[in-house]
Length: 401
Image 1 (tube, helix red, strand yellow):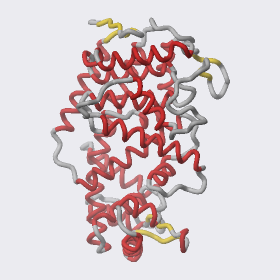
Image 2 (spheres, helix red, strand yellow):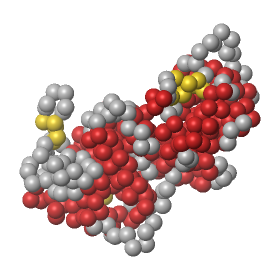
Image 3 (cartoon, rainbow, N blue to C red):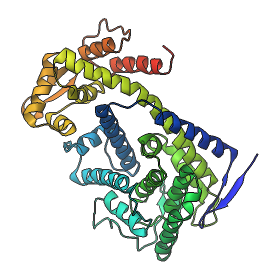
Image 4 (cartoon, rainbow, N blue to C red):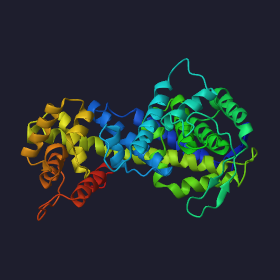
């Protein structure tokens, strides 16, 4: 076994054989995706929106904001559900803006790692809230507490040390981080900021976005390789367990190898999962466009409405037109044609009108995809039809069918 022990100003870690193997696999996945054929532009935009909504939804939910991914999709499209408060919607939009902000700065030749980068991200994460001290370091000693048992888990450094510790972190990111593979540098940035816990609230969200920015700056731009929010959101126990290496109180000499290992594993696992999903959904998207054009006589953009309905979501005029960027009358015409073709079914009336999926939609997709799907006896649409279709498609993408 070959081990490489490294110190990074604060904390230390070992590059184990396991970590090295995962890094090699990560690069293999990157190379394979770089060599893929050109993706349809409309589908790529759709995939970006899907992953963005899932990442935002997962990250804000991890911090106790009560929204579902479907509600996040509507909020980001300017169609806030009545069940979501305006304050929570602001935090959802704020997180999206923070993610987009770091993406816009990723390849800026004048970019410099400074403490204001961290504070600026935090300000956006908390939607500029003065009450929540957005963009300002904490002035009091905080503690990480188990939300269920109220047990104290970790005591960060005292507030007077926070500015210097953040300066040290960004100094390392601006100088020494380039010596590390980007996945390791991202893991270290994540755990270091979480360990400092520089803000009264929003530390986890800020740390996760900083990690994404490190990946962007390291040349990884595809969502498979950058944002880990959705993965961590589905593996919460693993995420919180990874932080146990910090101990119960601030210790700058802590060995964070377990966190680095967990983070690199998450990067690799997500890349593999999303690569498979990308292959299957690309084929699905082309079929959706085919069905929209040939079965309903609408523009290919209507694939966006069909996808939402297939996934069991209600499609409103406001949501649809914000996604495809058309005027309300054009959106109404598209949805009416899909309804007339039997691909969507209208629910409600007036401003409460929404459209849902149908059995005919699944039939049309199965035919376009040349999938043998038994729909006999299916009189109304439900998630089982969709799941059967997607299972067949995924199996074919894996070469099992």
